[in-house]
Amino acid sequence: MKQNLKTLLRAFNFVCLIVMVQGCSSVLRRGSLPSSDPPLPPNFPDASGPKNSAVIGWQEYFKDPNLKSLISTALQNNQELNILIQEIEYAKQDVRLTRGRIFPFITAGATTGIDKVGRHTAAGAAEDNTANEIAAGRAIPTNTPNFGFGGDFDWEVDIWRKLRNERDAAILRYLGTQEGRNFMITNIVSEIARTYYELVGLDNQLVILKRTIEIQQNALEAVKLQKANARVTELAVRRFEAEVLKNQSRLFKIQQQITVTENRLNYLAGRYPQPVKRRSEGFDKLMLSPINTGLPVQLLRNRPDVRRAELELAATGLDVKAAAARFYPALSIQAALGLQSFSLGSAFNAPASVMYGAAANLMAPLINRSAIKAAFLGASANQIKAIYAYQQTVLKAYIETVNQLAQIKNYGKSYDLKSQQVAALNDSITIAGQLFFNARADYTEVLFTQRDALESKMDLVELKQEQLSAFVKAYKALGGGYNRAAGGSGNTTQMAVPKVVGELRGGN
Image (cartoon, rainbow, N blue to C red; front, side, top):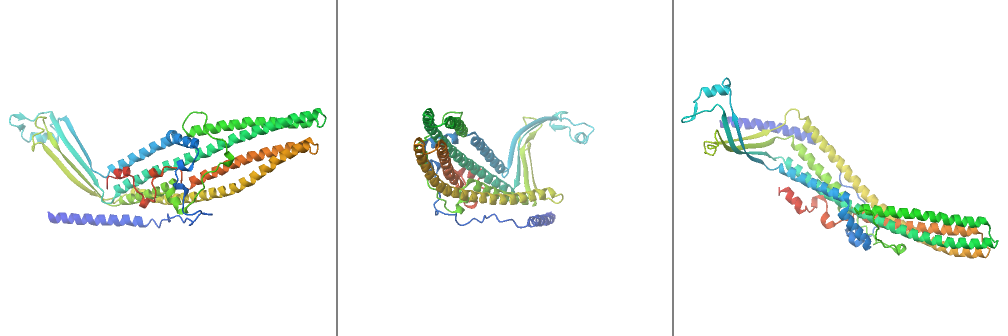
């Protein structure tokens, strides 16, 4: 008996060796993977040193209390963010699902029923050929009851780490959803800040336009007096009047932009339309905190989208390992233990009513392995795709940062020159008015000077909006704007796994 068992085990080991060699050859035929290490430059252009603004929380970076109140409201009420939180909860349950496959499945229950076999069947003939009594004075009933109480044990032994790799891949994707939430928070914070400064800029444009209309109305009255004194023609009066009407019409257009911008902020804050509290005074002097870029390599741990791509890349690597493990033999163990009897009263009479069984299966794929191979090759292709996606995300992060740094620099210089232009045109309005009333300048010179001054002031406000927007975008591009204590830091290999993830792993 022992010799036969040894021979059977040798034969089975030989088959397993063949299957493993075939599986390994399939893995080796994949070819080399592209490098997942992005070749980042050592420094940003005009780098400001290792200090990085991304580590500053938005509560510290933005000083305006009205803006901070808006952001806080949005992070509580924003529907899109709340939807994503539920998707994170779904990913968490998926981790628990994959973890559950590692452990044995044990079920317990009770059964009851009744059987009657035909006498002209094998079972009926067997009963006729045996004793007709199950106990002294008790005949075998025609309708045989059946009562059972027991439990089943079913366990796939994870000898190749297939199930644990699937669990760990699910954990990495769960962490990825957390990074997705962080990335959405940075987007919401950035969008609210940029929209808020746009709204404040529109308020200032409205003030500028109202002042200009007031000046032009005074000029119109003066031109009317000059026409009465026959110093100008009706054409001058009508041209000044047309300019006033044009700017009055423009006034309502800006008011509509203010309404739309306010409601965009209300939508981001998850609330119905209402006035948005803000401080519009001193907009031309407003400046955000200076941006410290740090080093490009810090993008890998500061930007949530980069970390999410890195986690997805690590998860696809585990998917490949889990798919490769399907080429190897799988060991499963089944067992059952319980009580069974013809009557409920005798069901608990042990050991007569005890029934049990146990089996171990070691199965290996030999024929029709195409489905396993297709799953493996699909997982390999998905891994390569994740590598390229990770490289693309890192490249995008670097370019976004460089663009915003250049925008801050160029808009700063442009704003200084535009301010000088506005000052020169303000002086020109006074000079043109004096020359016109002294009959040394034509009315068109006054009209065009006022128009140029208005446009330059409006452009200056828009340029200030763009300058502030560049600071906000640069802060976001560096990876700032979310709760870093909740988000964690570091790369995948050195990441501190949150306590909840440790619990989901089950210590395995």
